[in-house]
Length: 480
Image (tube, rainbow, N blue to C red; front, side, top):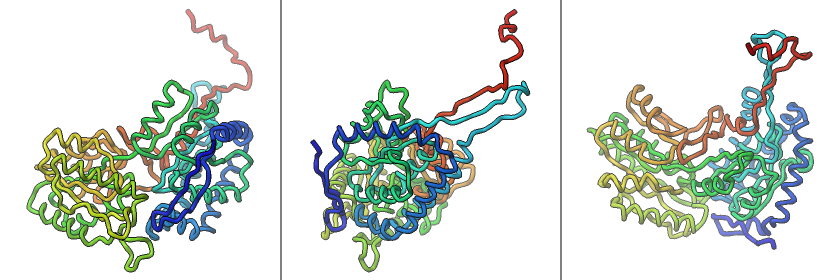
């Protein structure tokens, strides 16, 4: 029986999608249809697949405002943020094509030891790929997996976040206008149950998730023993930003606050811990951060003047963040800017800062284990850069990290020791480039970086030694 669910706007509570989840029977039929379509799709030339993907970029461009407005309405992103996401989704097409041509094109290797033997590398698609999308970048992040999967010759079954189902449908309408063959790209709707059913399908060849550590671990357990299914996980983090004593206070405050609170802290790369190396300017750095944070406006899209932070995805997300704040206080943190919900809405949370400088080693280890998603930052003062580096690395996660100030040699040590997949110097933790890999170490991923490298997990290399006729020498002649 199909379960009913509704996708409601975090801005005004209106229903943007009201329907039934895809049933288990329907999911099984969709996966089987995708498997049937895969043989035809992988036989289509790479140039034809590229052309279809480019048509999708044109569809996004033609409906740029419609997509941007829906992102704002369904997940609460401020207008500038939603507009930027649509731009990134469009740019992802040409970047994915470039990655495909550079990293996954067939190759012929010259200058082998035997001139009569041609050495070739081909790439075999996985077959049916399942893309499980997040709510925080509901257009850009799924596209960053769907597009490479299609280019590589895979068929795709897409399940958007149940909090971004309307946006998922709009994406599918754009793809339908592209003219993909029947069954190449399909969508299922629902929550965790729908994902579990699809993952259990014997037809699935790859599962790509953007989500929390708990979700990634659950899928990893579900696929235990299924070595034929490739799993690519893009998970969360407990991201540190280290501030050296020579970093200028005002610039530091801007970068730390943006790292922590952009998109209301609902980016997996947002900073969760700011670690200050004690020095003559440390208090000035912290004072400037507190001042800037107090002056950040929380509000709804369309407010005038425009807010810096919009709503969280739901009241339950705000309640979860409040529980995290309470847990931090119980650990021994001290409030610098207390947790506060705006009177206008339960999910409109103002940015909060707590000080963890007095936590003992056990509490700091516990802090490093925590994962949260919202505008909440822990600051921490330490003596010396080496201590700061050890504190930054004191987490099982390893998605993003940044160093503000310091020297080139310090940054090189930071890159080597912090244990993160995205490591920036004198920029925000949220800074990422489409032409670079994007993925985490430790509990933030499973060695399958996305971004420019997403094409790598969309197929398997196949090696061939090829001769025009059987080998003229007896291979057994090597036996003496």
